[in-house]
Image (cartoon, rainbow, N blue to C red; front, side, top):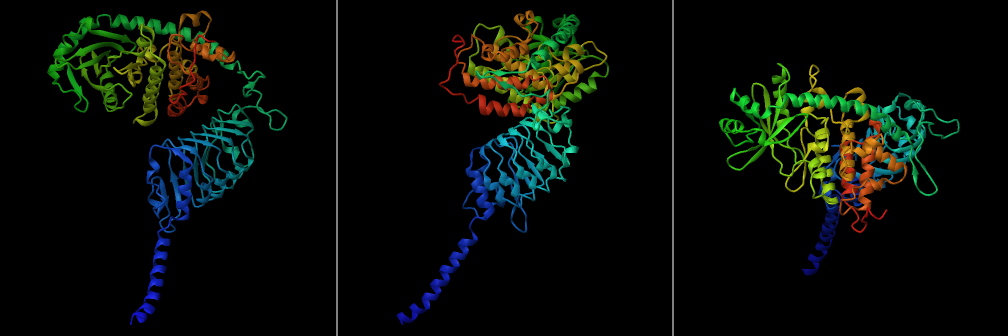
Length: 594
């Protein structure tokens, strides 16, 4: 009987083994999943977005950033932008040959663009901008005949633009700007429909698209777009173009300074009696508007305190108004900024815009708590920051900020400005970035202040526009010429701010003016002599050479004479985080040793 049962058990056992094998096979990772795992292996760091990508999971279609076709279960979209991904892009990306959308932009990828991407012939959109990719643009991208969007800008790509890309007849958006590409821009095929914006920021490129005439010899670069030449001693001989640009703007800067002087004179005359006028303002009928219940006081309590403020409580003044220290009975302290009304229509517009500003919350922005609406002025209530302004910390205190503190302040200011430009809604151009508008808390953390006020106080019928349009020494060349503010004019001002923090000198230091320069002109002169490290403040302790060089590189980009050559603030933050905030601890720079 036992033998009989054994003969029956053998086929049952074989069946069980076969069933187990089939079940195990059905739960194995798909080929697309295996490719994704290999792609993950090449990524050495991220913000945690890839933690869901588990090799034991048979279905990658639910992984973060991954989308699949519902029928075939093949990966058709991979979207992982802005996740601090660092590493190289694996050649296994080419195994995802059903991809229609690939977005890896605004990360920290380095290495080359894998030519295997040419296997993804179903791609409609390819976004790799804002990384550190280097090497050549692969000819194989010309195989992507369905491609409609291609952006590989803001990397470190070199060599020529492959003529094979001209075959991409469906291409609607194309961007290779801000790289190190050289040679003639191809004119065949689809290239004829793309304009200057697709190619700017590549000093070695030439062609009709950027109005740069190519030399007759093949592969020559534009006569007016020569890249920097490296001399035998290793020193870069920079073009004198930036020096000329900086010097040429001095006359315009002096004119702006004169306008600002008269504007400030008139404004101070208007606000001379601020101390006495403040009590009259609130006693003449005022109302308090609080944002999100941020102020735990009644309107009556606040107005009662406002009536006690006088000249002794003034802690600052500038183009936007006089600032008072407002201390409540419970010990909480606020900063009160008084802004005079400009015209009859001021109220409606101002209140609408203040509602927007009051809704903006960010770690690196000064918090607007509410405002008091009086008959003759607006009294804006902000958080009080005990560290004062960066201007005071750099130029008016005996105790100097050390190198780490300065880097931390620069990083905070960059993140605050990047938030205004890219992440808040609506986006905001600051228009008056300067050291006195960067405030410090008790831990020397930076907060950007006065954002949005320049726009609020614009008034074509008022002389006060000369004050709020910016500050002498921080203004971008094109802003002085056109009066039109953009994100890139803010980036220029931020670059000047970085130089001020590094050098410990104001942008209009007397030593610059005597030489007919400003701080940007001084930097450009030092760069032309390969002496840029001499800009560092000799009183600053703990300066590290590698960090200093990386920071100066960022500043040089920000103060480029052409706005198209300046990075975005998102890009600035990205570079600061990856190259400046991770210094080599053994490489210290002694300013007295050179």
